[in-house]
Length: 134
Image (cartoon, rainbow, N blue to C red; front, side, top):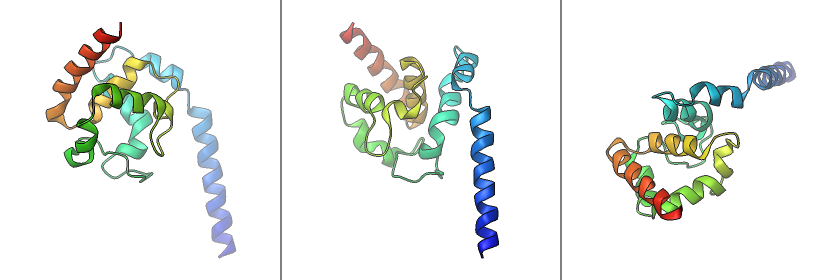
């Protein structure tokens, strides 16, 4: 049993070290900026661990495209949803942990996570919200 724990520990350490050496968020974000799939790419890179249909970290975050998960959140004003994205909520860190993401990239990732039937409406609501805060 101790041997298995030791091997498991070594595997975890090597995974963390290889991830750390290959994790260059600013480079990634500059590469995807302006891409038609920018929201999806940001989601996959930064958000999917908690927001995927089968999340790696199951903390109760709303899952991508799942209407029931987003129901209560989408009943709130757009300003509240954007504030929770900016400041974090419950186990989610501020900006979803993507401190390098621009506000626009966070919004694109958020829109990508919403149920498909809500994406256009919320896109328009966010544009209207931006006009009122200028």
